[in-house]
Amino acid sequence: MTEFQQLCYKTLKEKVPAGKVITYGGLAKLINHPNAYRAVGSAMNKNPFAPEVPCHRVVKSNGDLGKFAYDISLKVKRLEEESVLVENGKVVDFKKICI
Image 1 (spheres, helix red, strand yellow):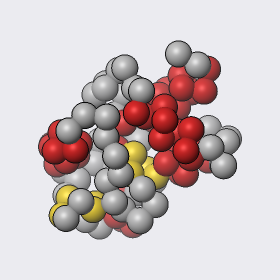
Image 2 (cartoon, one colour):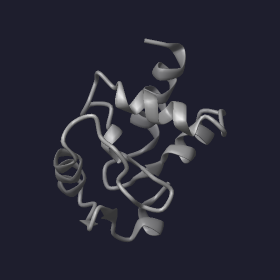
Image 3 (spheres, one colour):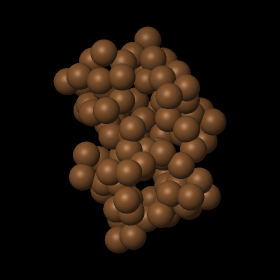
Image 4 (cartoon, one colour):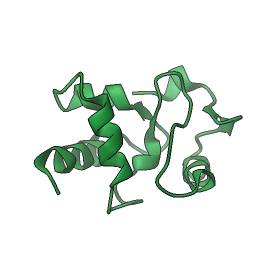
């Protein structure tokens, strides 16, 4: 595992609580790599610590769920268990719950 991946996982776990989401770009900014949103996506795809490191909380900048290394229905299930509503593949009230 790279230092970048470790930084992504640590930051996500510490800064994005249940009931909230963050964008790939938002997480990139939090780790001081504002242009590395694709690398953040790659790190989330390789997350060996899910769901303890909650990669299901990382979504696209328009509220779309984006991809998920596992079945997308699992991402929806995990989000809904945290009271994040999802409709038609998008986070409901995205702007209110996005960090």
